Length: 112
Image (cartoon, rainbow, N blue to C red; front, side, top):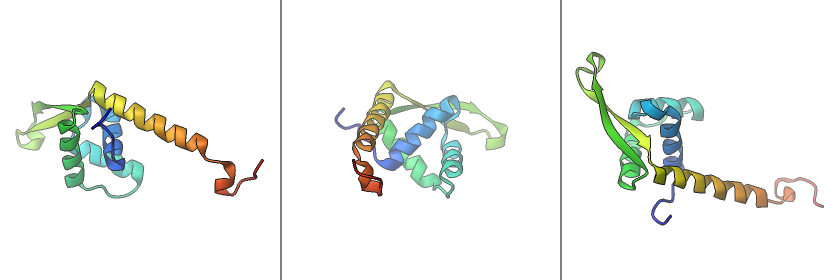
């Protein structure tokens, strides 16, 4: 999966897009991440990351319907591609493998 390795923030944004499923647009992703991370998240950083994920082929975007609350503008909605799902699965596999390999003594636990 060369070229689809995720940075930490890319992984978080991609997970938020998957979580929001059919309502994943930049403001919703900012709100979701801000709530879960319990810290402010920059709209600009999320927007740039979503663009980068699309360039990598990890997400697709489309325009939703225009709404009066947005002054007639349409939202750009994102969905995770199969390649994006595979990148998330690989990141998860690698993290789990690393966690499983840490000896208990590394965190001050008893050694066997």
